[in-house]
Length: 103
Image 1 (cartoon, rainbow, N blue to C red):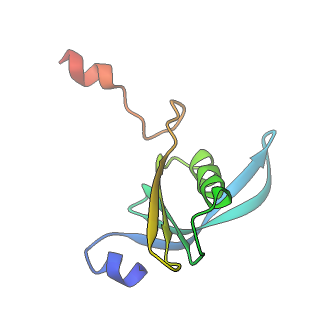
Image 2 (cartoon, rainbow, N blue to C red; image 1 turned 60 degrees about the horizontal axis):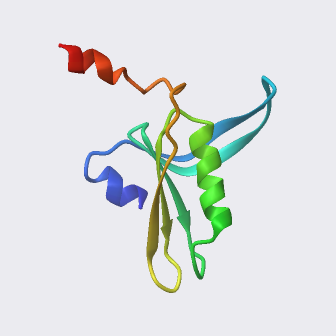
């Protein structure tokens, strides 16, 4: 997957570390499978089906980062994918849509 994405000119980071915070203290680290262009988290699985635990894992990654879009790709018995969004007004990448609309 990394080779295919990189060959199209995308920036791909493998096993991207995501610090885990609890009450302002770093208590551990998550590792996202792939981070594409510093924006989209890809979580890769090879399971029989996409499970709610897989979705929860990706949502935790989205909550802990500035990324708002995650893709869960399952290469199990039959290929599956889910796109998950975590919209958070506190994220740094969020702009103010009213500014551009007012101009």
